[in-house]
Structure formats: C-alpha cells, structure tokens
Length: 145
Image (cartoon, rainbow, N blue to C red):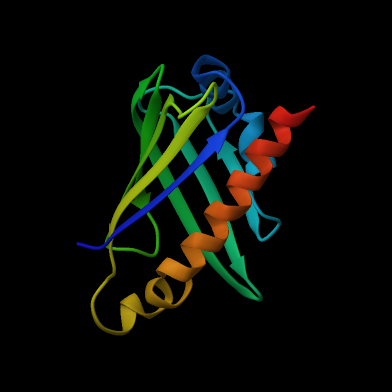
C-alpha cells in the first residue's frame, strides 16, 4: 500500500496548533479553491466531512469519517471516494525549537483497472505534495500575525 508523508514546522505551541485544527472553520482556510466543502461536523470521533474536489470540469465526491481524535491529532478515513482506501493521520508534536511539527501520514490504495484511473491521475504523490504544501503555507500564515 502506498504511503505519503509530509511534515512541516509551525512557530506555535502544540496546544495552539491542535486548537487551530479543532475549529471546523479552519478547514475552509486550509483548503484550496478547487475543493468545495459541503459538510464538516465538529471534530470528534465519528465526525463527517463531505466535499467535492474539482479538477476543471471533473467533480470527485469524497466523504471522510474522523477517528482517534485527541489533543495531539486525529485520523480521517475515506468512507466514500475515488480511492480503494485512504487513512490520513494528522499529528502535532513538539518541534526542534519552540514550535510544533505537523506530520501528515497517509496510507492509500488506488482502485484497480479503469476505475482507479482518476485516483492515480489526481491523487498521486506530486498532487498530494502540492496540496500539503498549500496547507503548510496557510497554517504558517495563520500563526504569523
């Protein structure tokens, strides 16, 4: 099963970064314009997030369920979507200095055959790196001022 890992540092304490991610309004701020959020329950075990990822005129619907929600992170699991599986764990840990290391760890699998084409095309490592680079930039920006 492929794994994607992305880490970055934020100049803020772990508790502040965790609180930031607990606020469901933040998801809109961390989400590029090509993603339309339809539902985002308050972060808790069993919370649901539903959205559409638009790649030009191509809509890809996604539904994720949250679990293992705690003070240092949470996991979202694709319930419905373009991939055979997707388990995304967010962790917030003390960084090298006074900041926080945000770790994004994703285990995923593409559907087989032609059904997996969209997943392989739009959710490949390069596309994931672009998405999480954007999220890192937005997170750092939120803590700058």
